[in-house]
Amino acid sequence: MVVKTFVNKDTATLNQFLREQGLVDMKDFIEIQIKAKEDRTKFHQDMLELFRQKFVSEDGKIVLKKDNDE
Image (tube, rainbow, N blue to C red; front, side):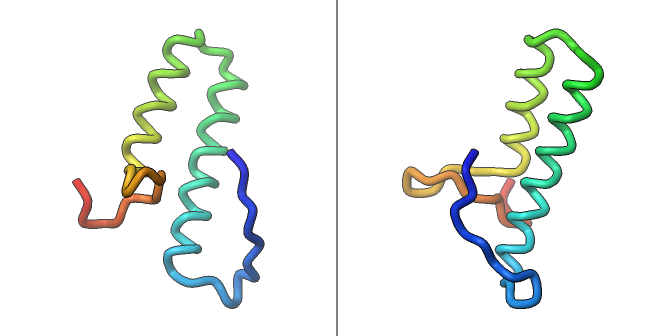
Protein backbone atom coordinates (compact mmCIF):
# COMPACT_ATOMS: atom_id res chain seq x y z
CA MET A 1 0.00 0.00 0.00
CA VAL A 2 1.37 3.40 -0.94
CA VAL A 3 0.21 6.66 0.61
CA LYS A 4 1.13 9.54 -1.68
CA THR A 5 -0.38 12.50 0.16
CA PHE A 6 1.03 14.12 3.27
CA VAL A 7 -1.48 16.12 5.27
CA ASN A 8 -0.79 18.10 8.42
CA LYS A 9 -2.92 16.61 11.21
CA ASP A 10 -4.06 20.10 12.22
CA THR A 11 -5.60 20.69 8.78
CA ALA A 12 -6.82 17.15 7.99
CA THR A 13 -10.47 16.62 7.15
CA LEU A 14 -12.52 14.06 9.08
CA ASN A 15 -12.33 11.65 6.13
CA GLN A 16 -8.53 11.96 6.02
CA PHE A 17 -8.33 11.36 9.76
CA LEU A 18 -10.56 8.28 9.52
CA ARG A 19 -8.55 6.93 6.60
CA GLU A 20 -5.35 7.31 8.62
CA GLN A 21 -6.96 5.50 11.56
CA GLY A 22 -7.96 2.65 9.25
CA LEU A 23 -4.40 2.35 8.00
CA VAL A 24 -3.04 2.42 11.55
CA ASP A 25 -5.49 -0.37 12.50
CA MET A 26 -4.31 -2.46 9.56
CA LYS A 27 -0.63 -1.85 10.36
CA ASP A 28 -1.15 -2.83 14.00
CA PHE A 29 -3.03 -5.96 12.99
CA ILE A 30 -0.29 -7.00 10.55
CA GLU A 31 2.44 -6.47 13.15
CA ILE A 32 0.57 -8.57 15.72
CA GLN A 33 0.04 -11.37 13.21
CA ILE A 34 3.68 -11.38 12.14
CA LYS A 35 4.90 -11.45 15.72
CA ALA A 36 2.53 -14.31 16.51
CA LYS A 37 3.92 -16.21 13.48
CA GLU A 38 0.52 -17.70 12.66
CA ASP A 39 0.25 -19.81 9.55
CA ARG A 40 -0.09 -17.90 6.29
CA THR A 41 -3.59 -19.17 5.45
CA LYS A 42 -5.11 -17.82 8.67
CA PHE A 43 -3.13 -14.60 8.33
CA HIS A 44 -4.45 -14.00 4.79
CA GLN A 45 -8.02 -14.86 5.83
CA ASP A 46 -7.84 -12.46 8.77
CA MET A 47 -6.34 -9.70 6.60
CA LEU A 48 -9.06 -10.13 3.99
CA GLU A 49 -11.76 -9.94 6.67
CA LEU A 50 -10.23 -6.80 8.19
CA PHE A 51 -9.98 -5.26 4.73
CA ARG A 52 -13.65 -6.05 4.02
CA GLN A 53 -14.67 -4.51 7.35
CA LYS A 54 -12.80 -1.24 6.72
CA PHE A 55 -12.90 -0.68 2.94
CA VAL A 56 -15.26 -0.86 -0.03
CA SER A 57 -14.84 -0.51 -3.78
CA GLU A 58 -16.49 2.58 -5.30
CA ASP A 59 -16.15 3.34 -9.00
CA GLY A 60 -13.15 1.03 -9.27
CA LYS A 61 -11.33 2.64 -6.31
CA ILE A 62 -10.84 1.26 -2.82
CA VAL A 63 -12.12 3.70 -0.21
CA LEU A 64 -12.69 3.66 3.53
CA LYS A 65 -16.22 2.55 4.39
CA LYS A 66 -18.54 5.18 5.75
CA ASP A 67 -20.21 4.52 9.13
CA ASN A 68 -23.56 3.77 7.48
CA ASP A 69 -22.14 1.25 4.96
CA GLU A 70 -23.06 -2.35 5.75
